[in-house]
Length: 109
Image (cartoon, rainbow, N blue to C red; front, side):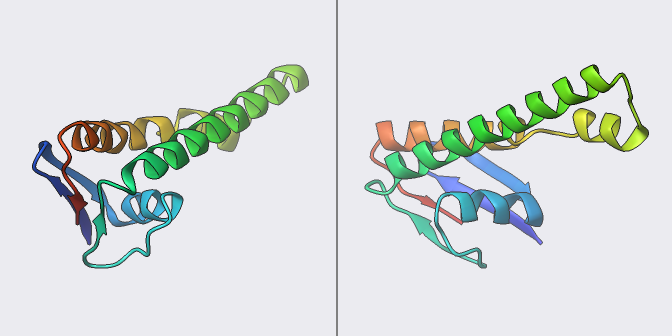
């Protein structure tokens, strides 16, 4: 399944199910076939996503520093470091939310 987020303010944002579910859980929405983030809920959603991105960045940085200190780089750690970060996955959604707030438009899926 794909999540297709829509707003009158922007083009659609399409995410794979696991990524869309993660974003919805972060913003406090129940993942499902359809839903809405109202204009009133958008500021809290942006704040929640940005906080989750900051936490993920800090966790990745700490993991990378631990690897550097140990001098070991196994393939699993290297793979995790090369994986797509939450920052990259959430950026289109954060942009959609900001533009939607500016144009007083809800986000639906």
